[in-house]
Length: 412
Image 1: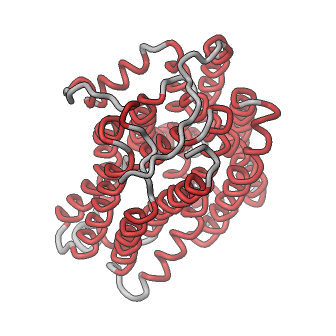
Image 2 (image 1 turned 90 degrees about the vertical axis):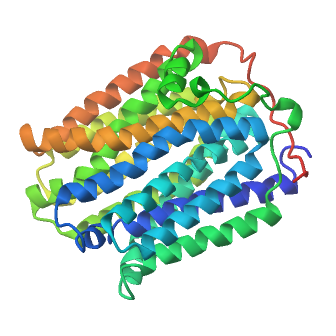
């Protein structure tokens, strides 16, 4: 089938739903996670370690899932990983001990790298010039899940603390059934890798190192790390910041993050896709990073609470410009049979930032000052912007390896 066909649009709709459900599940657990852990341990470190366990195992598993999808196709690996996510949520809901909660989050972390497979699917079925627009839809699904998830988790917790996890598991399981019937294969057999699996190819450290040795993507991958390192620190630390500086509680933070989510959805689903053809991925990524440098500095020194609303709104605009365009730039630098692997590396880097970003933000908050995570975050994003600027020569080269998107195979 040709790109842009009805089958392609239906498949992309399923990918959007998949990412939305993934982020909805993550968001559902945000308001209830501390209360669930407190049934077994009141130590705050336990909550942090439970969240970190998910990201650590996602980091380890993402390259494996990416390689498997390059070898065996996107469809079977995506459906199996979604089934694993559903199982992880059901275990979490039924867990009667702290160690079983960890097992559940580890299961979900192992299968949570399916975002990279979703991105590879998009790369398979869209031409290089349109990929950032399609990746923007993924960003929109992220934002929508981030808006609805926490509110839904709080509502379902009135039934029981296990209800949100069971609901997320049921949604994931229903998505597996839907995908079995509507999701075709996007990677033709002739474009798959045929080398046997080796540890060096799926070792997340070696795969990241190998990717960083490639001139066409190294600067962009490091930019992704710097940008998300700062952002993950903000997400984890912001409630402490507003409590310490302005005396805010959960309600004010929820309203502010809902605003950020709404702006993110609008940016990545409606605005970025219209601006990419005119300005290009690189210019929009640089503009978005520059805007975030300014907003992070403003957050660190903002004197009044109400000012956080326009500042965080601008930060969300910058984030909306940056996320899909950086992914598009990376995707366009590799061949079709490497999409799963390189986007798996990107997912691994993102997982690492969700481990180390919050740790840095907490350390800076405790030892330097309440604004330190944000002005230091501005430094990391400024470095990311310089790295994207440094990638200009590679980005401007004729894309010999970037092939036109292929149509979706109907074989299952």
